[in-house]
Length: 72
Length: 519
Image 1 (spheres, chains in turn purple, green):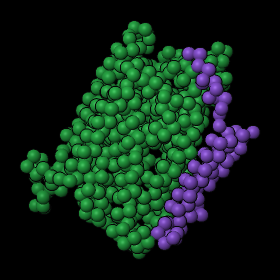
Image 2: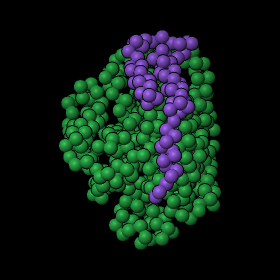
Image 3: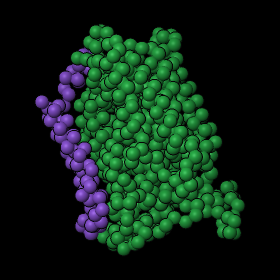
Image 4: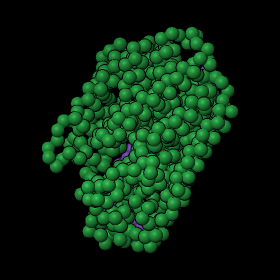
């Protein structure tokens, strides 16, 4: 279930990257930050937040345990 | 000379770091190749980030924003923030786990066992090496070409250049020539990798990542201050007929091109030098910080550079004859800040970004030659641990020498930097292979061969069309797009379809292999 949620959220983020609504917008946010650039800066922060949530709630603990067994 | 002394001081610090890292060297091959799998969260984050960010992160991003505007951030930075972390999480941790459990050091070792084929390693090995070498060349050439203008005028007697045809002095006259600049950079990287192994690279990467992140921010603050402030700098762009299109993406890039850049950062899944860094982690938990902080770190480095790039379009105007977009950052620092100290610091930052990729690449090629060819041929017990380390050092020395020689020979070739893009595309096109190896029990040896061979075939055809074949007049500089998309889209599609179709109709891997790799 967790994997499905992570995949769906990842797909949502992938679609949100294509911000056609700011494609030709030259507005300067706060007087200096072009709208399209500001949007993608926020996108980077949201991506980090997404990965924080993934690492908190969907961490692959089993993979770690399997590796530590080490029968090499 | 202040600028020069800062650069020299920085390089001396790296030599010192190499000596210190050697003191911690345990003398085992596991320590030389994968730091005894003991690297913690912070060093893993900094070394992986430093390795993925090349000199392009500071110099190229500014230049690209100057020519193509703010969309460059979405193309390269925000996509990478999302996709790199996804690859670290979905593939990196899995590969770390099999590496730790079965003692792998290189990708070929893993793929050989996973696909039950010794020959697969011999097929993959030259492909990986050939894809890494142009990537290395870009770094070596960029270092030499960056040092020359940064030191121009400092040594007029030692390195004079003839005047320009219009009688004016050559702008590079008195600068340290590329053959010396590239050579010094190669020697310094060689020094700390030779003596410290991957530990030397990890430590140096951490230090260099801190340096290029801080110097980039200092340059941003100083440049914006000297342009009258953030608002004034950006308003000048809006008011300039030449610069204002760069505030949006219309006319600067296509929507499909923007979307299809998604596939380019998948390349990190197949970079052999990143594979080696993943294996250094002490535990899977150490990946958490890397996965979370990577998008933020990319933003910290890229956002200021993109703004400097569009401000430069308003401040500098169109490029003059002989000027390139990659010189934009240096020109903005030189013309606006007038501080030899800052020029030196930014110079150190650019070299830091270049060297933090070079060291890992040199190291991984030495590791691959030793483990995938020599030890594979003679058996793991033929050499002592100490001998394996010296074999690796010998290969690293040879790789540095060959790269340096090629770098000097090709330094004026127009296509070397284009090769870098094609390296990324090649690695990205092999991503379906590693993804399937990790997640699909049903992927077969024949499917792996089909994927690799079809990737090579499509890569060669598209490479020929973009780099070798003659283009119509006026389109020589245009990026090759297929149906408006990046060529990597087609390459990944062909690679994935070949892998899936052939795997579905060929013999499945043995039960023992499935049990070995799937918990």
